[in-house]
Structure formats: structure tokens, C-alpha cells
Image (tube, rainbow, N blue to C red; front, side):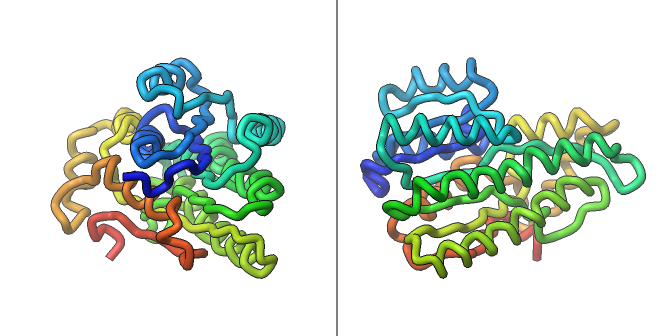
Length: 251
């Protein structure tokens, strides 16, 4: 316990799914956590449950003005930021033939441009005292799926954006690290949304299970554990890394 005691962390999309698991773990380990989310009702409910260690800010990750306002509020309230988790994201099913241009652009806006904006606008505040930027990528950023064209493209972009940002932070001696987490299929509400987009949800679910050599889907708290390591000083020498937690599915 207390592995990130006193650290100030922002978790985007922290009201549910992987974000919620990360928020819970960070609070348990002593951090002050800001949830940045568009689902304010769910975020406030979680904050009320977890107590004074959690606060909520409205954040649409596709809007640059929201990011600027978010970091201004964190600076005013806490004076610094130690950890940013770029977790907010969506998944839309679609191949090169079936995915619409609008669907493709929306996925890039949320899953990739949102990460870019977070990395860009956290820098002026975080570089004052150093810290850790954690970008949620995916096994789909490393291995293609014909029916997840947009998601593949966005998460592959996150993978290389992370490395480029990490290199910049290191060369500038900002004391900032930037790493990506690559989960396999994790049983969260977003998985339910993906299943609702197909004709045979059970077949899709069974294919996910069989695609993981470990023989099951992942649990949100297992991703929370990696996010904790990357937020802590234990990972001080890790930057630009791909932390693959996918039950062997990308092998």
C-alpha cells in the first residue's frame, strides 16, 4: 500500500471500465485522483463512493479547450500533476469496406487525437517536477483485425505517438516518462458495446476467449496493476515501452 502516496493523477474515461479500475487502484495506493470524463453522472457517483481523494472534471478528450481548462483547474487546485492516464476511448466494428468515413474519423478523434492533446497539454505543467504519462493502446495496436480497421489504426498511432513523446521528454531532460499499455480483450462495458454491433455476440465472445492462449479474457484490475506500476517510482527507468498484457493473444 502507498506506492503512489500523495501523487496527483488525472485519469480520462475514469468513470467506468478500465478507467474505473485504475482510479480505484490509485486511490487505494494513496493518490489524489481527478476523473476527466464526459459521463459526469457516473464519475460523480464513483467519486462519492471513494471520498475526498477523488474529484471530477468535465473533459471531452477531442476538444482542445477542455484539455487546457482541465490542466488549469488541476494547477490551481493541486499546483502540479504527477500522472496522466490517457484511457478514454471507443471501439467501432468495421472493415475497410464497411466502416464509414465518419466512423473512422470519430474513432481517430477520440482514441488518437485525444491522446495527442493530453500528451501535448500536460507537458507544460508536468515538466516542472516530472512525472509519468500512460497511454492506453491495445493488442490491436500490434496485431491486425480485419473487422477493427479504425481501432487498429488509432491504437497503432498511439503506440508510435507514445514513443515519439517519450523520446522528446527524455532528450529535453523533463523528468517525464511516457509508456503505452496494450491490453487484450478485457471484460468491460466497452466490450459489451462491441458485442452489440454484431449479429452473433456469443460467437464473437467465444472467438475472443479462444484467441487468448491463456484461456480467458482479462480482468480490469489486471490492467490497473500495470497502470499502478507505471505511475509509481518503481518504473522510473521505463519510457517509450509497450507493456503488453493480453493473455498471449498477440503472440
